[in-house]
Image (cartoon, rainbow, N blue to C red; front, side):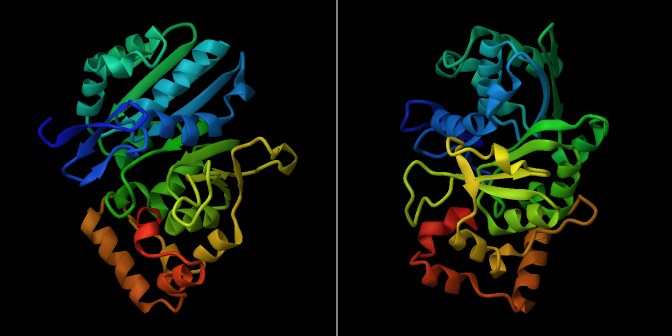
Amino acid sequence: MSELIEILTKDGSYSLRSLFFQENFHSLLGALEETKLKFTSTSNLQRFKGKSLNVLDICFGLGYNSASLLDELIKQKSYLNLYALEIDKKPLEYSLRNESFLKLWDPKVKTIFESMYRQDYFEDQFFKCSVLWGDAREKIKIIPSSIKFDLIYLDGFSPQKCPQVWTMEFLSKVSENLNSQGYLITYSSSAAVRKTLRNLGLEIFTIKPSIKNRIFWSQGTVAIPKFNNKKLKPNFNFEKLSLMEEEHLLTKASIPYRDQDLNSSKDDIIKRRLDEQFFSNLLSTNKWREKWGMTKLSVKSKI
């Protein structure tokens, strides 16, 4: 694991840093906290108490999102059909060796993860879990089109570091697999990602931060094909985009990443977008930052 470095985050949970991507798997504020606040809480899992749900975890990584999901579903006795997409087995190998990680969850999570690591599969009376190793752009084609997901977690490295899983074409394929009332949840507040999801016909929401300021104005994005407005209650931790966020989608930052044949390299995808931005008449993102009193540094990770 020479290209992966162990990181201890501020909430005491462990994560990794990829030297290849030059990016951490989680926020330094806390791997566990990020998982709970951005993914698990946002999923509103009580909707599925005693019921069955389909979940797609894209960029499974160390397994925090799926582990937290499984932990909650074990408590409420729900039934789960899980598909995980991941290109690298090393993060999961690390998790299975890390006692601090394993102690965070019900012991059954370890059993499930060990089976997924060794056999790519786990099944019992409650859970059916499959992991597809390889390029997510290829592996998503293997999932039967008849399966519609109630939850899709999209947790890859940031769009600038790994644009392959944030393109118009890949997100289009992903959204085809989303249940009409399903949630696509991601930590990303990227204007390109949000505008792409909206253009694909999904209603988008912002995940509310615990404290709003010019640096932490969102914890991510939720996209839903057909949202019932009557169900958007004040206690939900996501809400409609603010005026500032809406105006973000009118800037050059909102120009999508494109990968027509789902096989382009990172460099080609980024160059294609830079060329499109250069010739675009949309408002510059710097103008948007100036209007809303933000520096480039403060929003670096979000666009």
